[in-house]
Length: 114
Image 1 (cartoon, helix red, strand yellow):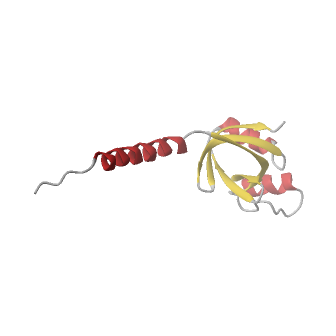
Image 2: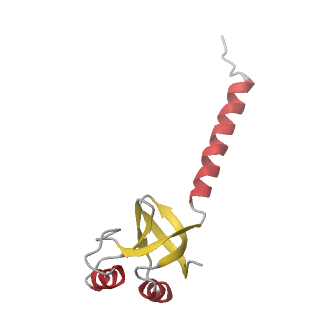
Image 3: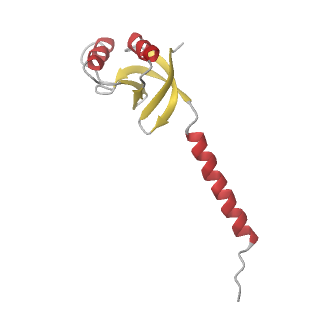
């Protein structure tokens, strides 16, 4: 007795694979977040003025972060221009464009929030 898989099962399997592939591609698309520039160690709670605390912590090895509501994203970049802009905007509102992976954003660009 030969087993034949109904066409609907094959069609559903193909649609599921296409859906998984398209969601994986969408995950790598850059997004933009607006929030306050901080550092990964202090997040939203600073010891003193936010700008001074952020710069001090980053100078001691902490990474820049972006506080968006209750969420703190660690910002990953080695781009000198982005790092300079983050330093300039420490404690202020900024727009960060990049790709998120959990609680980390791989930074593509940084600009002051208008």
